[in-house]
Image (tube, rainbow, N blue to C red; front, side, top):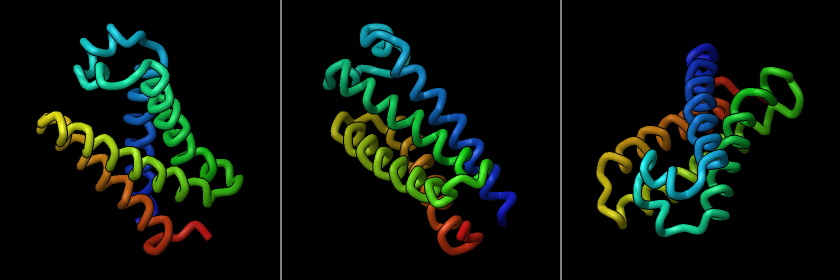
Length: 125
């Protein structure tokens, strides 16, 4: 199970790192074309904050355990990304964006899997 958790952590880290870097590096008008019109509902600063959260979460999913430096931060990262996905689901449900809700729900389930897996199934403590 440890190998499965590592694979899921790696996939999630890649997905969140890419999503976060796009939000951090692109202006709002470019993001509107790339990731959707939901960005119109938020300030550029809020979008950058979401991107930073995703990048830090991605790093937190892998590096603390890989370097064996405060590995419990992996659990914190998984919890934080789960909360981020709950917020994303709420935004996309409000906007009736089914495809995005499906993607965010899948990411939520995977982050919860890592959270539960690292707490109970293959604990890092």
